[in-house]
Length: 458
Image 1 (tube, one colour):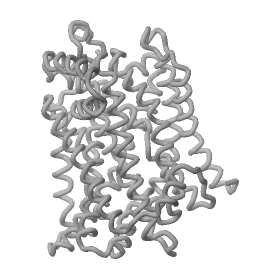
Image 2: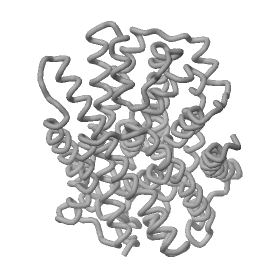
Image 3: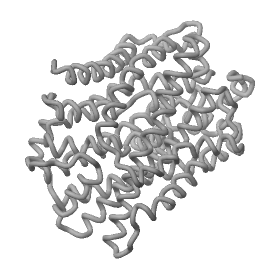
Image 4: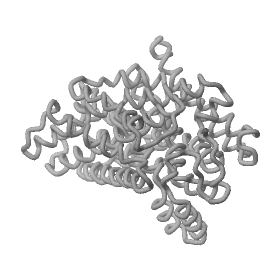
């Protein structure tokens, strides 16, 4: 069911995942030839070429930069200034080792990773820990925060331009837009590229809009550089909560698995591995670190040191807007912020469909009613337009998921080093293996710190 090697042996791409069937083999062969030609180009031209062909990394960044991630960044800056900036890049960079494993599985594995997990490590690991908890629960539960934030921002933007669009009215607009974009994914190579380009554009919009706000409020560069490079840990329940939310927001099971399946959906084969690795850096890590840095810095420059800080993204943004001064800066912040929940909701729909089909061993068919219904499942979060989304819920889920991340991370580590699974393409690098072990260990430490804090031991 998962191994379809005939065309993979004859051509440079692969057809392990049915969503790649719509891509002509000639297109994959042409991509492989283009990648060979890029190797002779200067570094700037190589990076531009990789960015053009890349996509799964940008989609993973858009999924990761959601309401929970930005809320933790806003709270981090408002409560601790620049002191926790180091968490962002440490969490993300440590995660790149596992993302490299996903790139290897995608381009050289010849399998779909959840199916291979079930074969090697059992159905509970594959279907429950990876599929149900690591993917499905995130896709549905986390979308409530996206809808709540997105509909609030639409209302706020409407007020700025003189249009009355309360949350109770604008949620159909939000749901319709995100559902339509999600349903475009997988409809041939053009559908995949459309969603990828939408994510690239949305990430650029975030950087531009948030960056404009940063220009207005300014940066204390000595403090920012100190916080970026010098580790510091907060104490107390609020400090630990924000630290957990910030560190757990970077990379986990959903990011690992989605990246793998998104690469398979593009038909990536052995000659695409370097592209895949660059995509994780340029498409995932760089946008995540830049956007997080800007958001933390904006709130550090405006709300740090003030008492009675709000705890939700909507309340934090409402507290920030008057401090920006310029009308255009305030509007830019809200528009850039609106791109955050929209892109995440889109990707959560795709993740949900992928998860459901792997859990129940259904072959994906994007034209089928079943695939469409699975993509629409997270839209049950439309109730988020009427219900508050407290940060504590996000933090509790993040702490519990960190345990799942650790266990599933060990499973992927074993697959990467399994001679019978990866053959000559298994990991032979001590540094690579050590990097993965460091990440999964850090993920488990996040959960342990949270438990110790609640027991009064930290």
